[in-house]
Length: 168
Image (cartoon, rainbow, N blue to C red):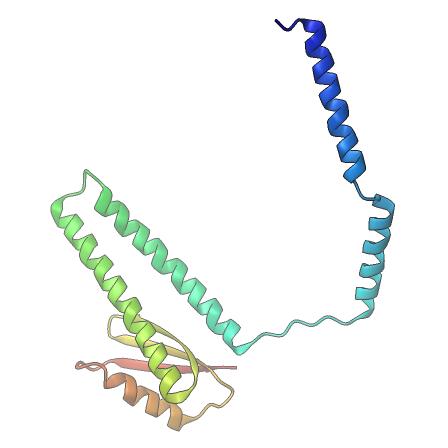
């Protein structure tokens, strides 16, 4: 049986052991602080600049849209999993979820089509019968915009309202 005296000895010995291992493995903080301050002072001499890429605008649009879609999906899934929801509400939520997935797939299909046909990076957002296309290009060509509109419209039987916006 362990008495109090042995327990204190084991505790203090463990503490001394841990501190000695820490001390041995610890690097010299004065050297570390000196190298960090040298790096900071040498970096202050260099000019730093932030460049915004064409694709970063598209990435920002995609992230914002993905957040909206995820929020909508979570809302619909809570309706589907809610035990108090009626069958009609669950059916509507399920159909909305399917429509959301279908729209997302169609947006990706159009982006891929624009990339393959015109070699342009784009962001597509579909809302009911409206399609908004944002293209990352410095060339604001009406011919390219018209060709893209015709190509995208050929994917649909109904008349779609397609807008194209060029981002620098």
